[in-house]
Image (cartoon, rainbow, N blue to C red):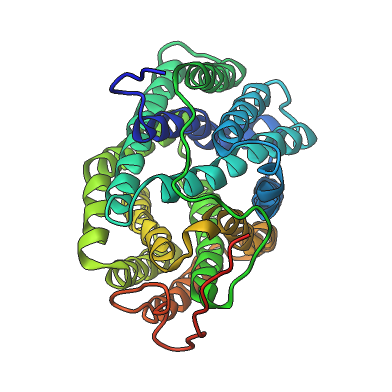
Length: 398
């Protein structure tokens, strides 16, 4: 089959990222206003919803069993379609139970897609190409987010579109783009045949630990930073959309450079910088009383999180290439162990003291910093950590 110049793995991953982002960014931007206005959510309900959203991430290890039946590329398309359906239905079920249901459906698609996308990226591209590509994928997602948030701002401020209509448009756009990719792109083969069973390797322990802490720490940003803007500072949908536009303008401008930076300075230095920055940001969140300063912290927070691509490139350098697909699912499950629990528990803490939630986030950043300093300057198979090495034995092929 003859292919055109744009029918490449890189362009497919970019388009997949765009489709996912258009749908998910809309869901995230509307969420806090939608649940407060239409379903009278408090911190307890939003914490429960976010925990439900993370359950499919906790079950991401099951992706390896799906791969016994489906090719990874096909699995990615089906996951994107499920994401689009869940988001398109969200506006039609504006109740506590309805939102829990549509969130779960949407989240199954989202987490399976993210698992498979990470696996395909690490399989299709070399160690030298991956940091820059991951930066480009973040930049592409930021451009898609800008489109989504601009649409939200215009739709709400100038056309008065309902939540139902906006969710339907964004979910439908994801479905249309997925259908296009299914029909337009060839099926790409991985360079190395993947093991299709669950595995945990002792020598990957630092990668697992960094992934676990990333999942715990991310909840502070994903769940409570945006909720703070609406509950404490009274941000409207258009205010949130404007904040997200500014946020993603910065990401679009710097994301590709961040990927290049990780490639040049290495994972150890990149993650050290990220966790020091996140410690400062979370501590500032705990005491901020000005809406403008809070918005600035939100943007800084997101930029620091972009450096987390270094965890993925660290794993690519130390991994047996045949382990990537299976480990991607296991890593997503590890990432979501804390993520399933933290939103509910921290949602209850939020009712007593929002400050305490962000200070606990500062503590998580410090733990992550200690772990990051254990990455060798030049990680590789057999040189995974500075302290706590496990003898490297070459894996036996299936």
